[in-house]
Length: 138
Image 1 (cartoon, rainbow, N blue to C red):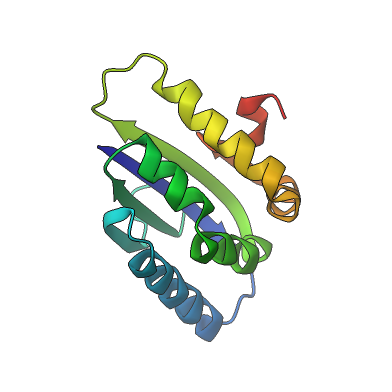
Image 2 (cartoon, rainbow, N blue to C red):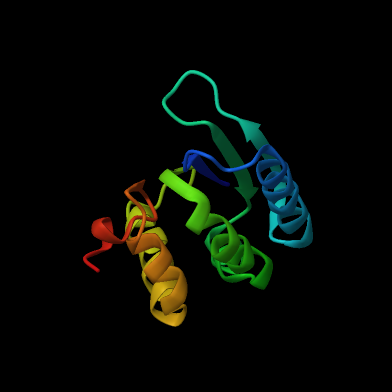
């Protein structure tokens, strides 16, 4: 299993109705992606971020499907311009010692195939974690 998590804070001044609509869009997108077995989206407590999400994916093949699903890409395109600070992480019980590199390769391919999303990521003030291009040599 892979638990893919994100934590993020929005830029100041985003109207509450946009925040609510964005979180609903994230929920709808996660519901539309069959590779996601379960998920949670909501407020992030105990850290320096405002919101977070965790998606549970069965294996690396489903992880790649999730990351490249049109609904996920659309959320990136709509949400990243509103985001000030973002981080991602992945937790897995898969014993493969190359799992981190394989996850990074999925993100590298995703950014190469979707340069507009890569540009939105590059424009973020603060982006770290398993999906960060700087971790992948981009």
